[in-house]
Length: 547
Image 1 (cartoon, one colour):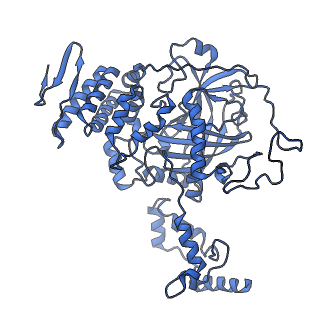
Image 2: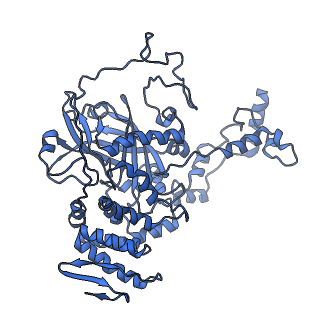
Image 3: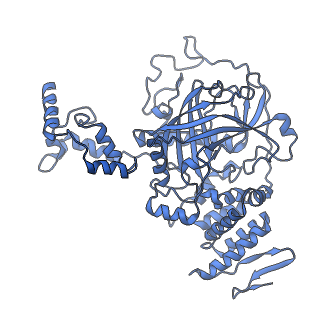
């Protein structure tokens, strides 16, 4: 049997004449195409002969006559049965959010001494290298969706540390849309598809925003230039929450972790993004893949904004509130190191789709955020991975930590060695794995009391002080475009909220919306106009501006 397989192999190799010469046309092709486009030709170049004998999933060699089922007993053909039954089950549940994305491998290098603030091994020792896996994603798109949609982008980083996996789950905005975790499912429902039309619905989006006015700050980020970065490599990423950390002496600090792109922040105006999307809806994914293949390895600097407990007692705002930015002058920034991506996965599904990130995956020295939204994420992220990948998702290769000893057993594969013959209960008298004592773990515990009050000052500060004049103009344009299709009632509510945020913002959106509605094929609604000082403006039934 073995000799016949070898003979078959030689016949294929010799008969197929796989010895190739690179002619002028092939040379031209390789020089005018990008790495993503020529991936299959690259594979052929690297493997001038077939990579092996075709088999069934059980390892049986497939005879060439079994690759055609016509005029045969198709259901006695195990190769045919293998193909069909596997194709029926080759998909796993799509992520509810962050469904469309891509991944890459790289490393994190410590460049500064931060031992004064944090004891975590991964961040200590200048020059220390830690392997990483990173997944980028667009939040609301389904698999196969548009990379260039105006929506939040994600950047999830898995550090394979000696103390376990550390997952940093970040967004390209430094603020979030709400602080009450009970709103999570409603928020994602509002930003995804209408349950009847199965279309993205701007009325749902604006209804959520006006019913939850604390979200206006993040919505301003969304409709600003930052709503469409020019690819994943040219955006910053923020962990949103305020993290508690501690050093080896048990001293506490409170920090915000931020990834700052070394490629420079670059964003796309709406018209340019639409033009690119028409040609290539996978623009972000292609851009990252090509950058790595061309050895232009993208990199980010990891920083942390730091406050001590004394600092927190002397500020006039809640530093744990994720709908606002920390005020300048109330913190100082420390550089930790560099994240570099230098390797594309050999198989997209095996890495990007099978990866599981959980912000609750922390390491000693990082107890983590204390706000209720983060506490909810600790539970919900694990639950979604169990649903999507199974209870043993942390034993899938891309998620497996460098070291693990558990009392978990069984369940759907992969189970790896399933802890072999070790005891499966704790405590036990037979030398199963035992916990350790962390002498530097802080003894004090703090409780955050969160208010329901909505503060629009930080949204106004973003509009007036963070954005430049031309950026404010584009924010208004983008906001108006999103308001044109929604109902008159929602338009009035949106303008009122924008006016409460900043009166000039409300006026500009109102006036531009009126002009846009005049040009729109949709009948012009009666839109309530905001007050400017003591003069009240509104549209009458004939759409004339009156005072």
